[in-house]
Length: 185
Image (tube, rainbow, N blue to C red; front, side, top):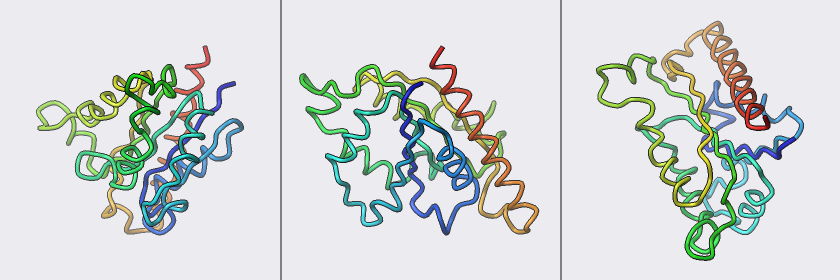
């Protein structure tokens, strides 16, 4: 079994999320999965770089879990990558710590699927370009992604809608787990 590190990049998981929170809670229950909640550990955006690098080195699979904000990852997760993926650690002539590790992206998007489909200005695959670029630079292997659409803040106006969103999060966690399990094969 592989060691899986889930890096949760939602900046306010406890008070501002339904789907991402459900995903993180479900993934945390799985043996071999370690969850790194950046919002809880680093609300001030000041990372313990050595500790975060050690977590990455222990992992075989890294899952980036985040909501899409303005066609990209939240600032908290972006800053984490900027600080932790240092020259000499993750890239450069001596930066080989992430080579061969598999990277999975687990995203949530407020807009419906059609907003990223045929005829749309931006397709979901376009959102993955920065992550794929990071994989190319660091020697990680992009192993795929899972996404749940239509989970906007505006959609959670009733208890029923919130329950549907929680269910969607649990379902995405299952899909992420299945994707990771295929990597073991």
